[in-house]
Image 1: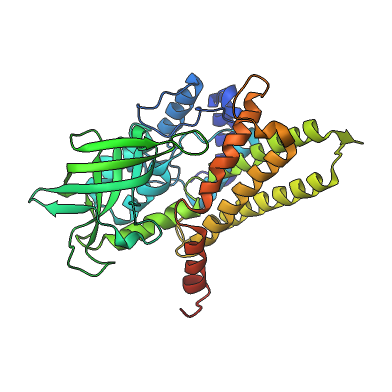
Image 2: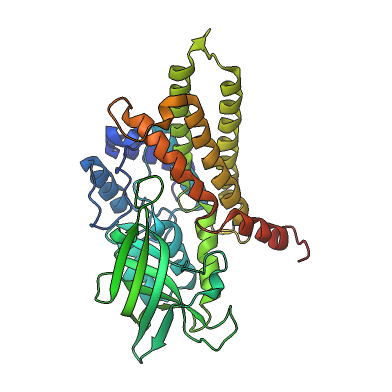
Length: 398
């Protein structure tokens, strides 16, 4: 067995030789890779970096090799994170494939489902989107009404989903559907996988206040999901669906991205603060900004270290249960705080929407600030997370 120090040397050498220089810088707009072929990749190095990491299994480091991963132990995975952070290497692949449906299939999927879907996720060949929320069924997700009728070897799906992140680029969707309308609300729900490129699916992007169309509404008119793409038991999908949300909220599967992002965020925000506020004796001149920046920096580092400790303490690298709501709640607020500080530091320059008098960074700050408000709602509202923490973590009475 290779010693951990030998593994570190090997990984460090591999990263140094294979990570393109542009992949060691903060990602520009449109440079993040989430898989699939529908969204163009603006930087060719992003595709090259993805291909090299996928070949090595580093897009899903702790997945078994048979499913496209590297089969790393927890201690090896943490070494990989350290070395990526040291080089400021970008995460080669992000999105719902590696962070949500992939870990869920590892836990609940059949061997055939794992072999069919996981390698394509790890290689970036296929991109996934999430079909959970519906008009009138958001925080109260169990009230969903999208129906799936059993037709023998397949299901016929009718209804709609909303706030479906980047569904216009999705190749496949994982979704919760009602398969027994007579059952109690939390029962009679099934978890399905469904290809997006088929008749009967209409995707309508929704323009947000930030000006982007990050979310979509999807309409299903006799869309088809094969029987072999039922995950878990029929009418028992609520358990699978809840577990997937825990994977999403933990951020553990994409921890390398969190580790490098926090460093990049601190550096870029500090640079803006120095430029906008000026410096005195090498320090940011505005004491209030210095204090807020220091607090944000410490919280970001503490958050990353807590996630890392959770990986170290987890059994076999498994995502924890209800405690992931703490990550979701704190991470959402942390992201909003950063965008608030970025806007405050820029002053009037952060209030622009368009025009040549504003730089690209200033216009981006405005939109990111507006877009960040969704963080406390998407993936389960902050209020829902606090309820879960109170009941499932602290054991408080209803």
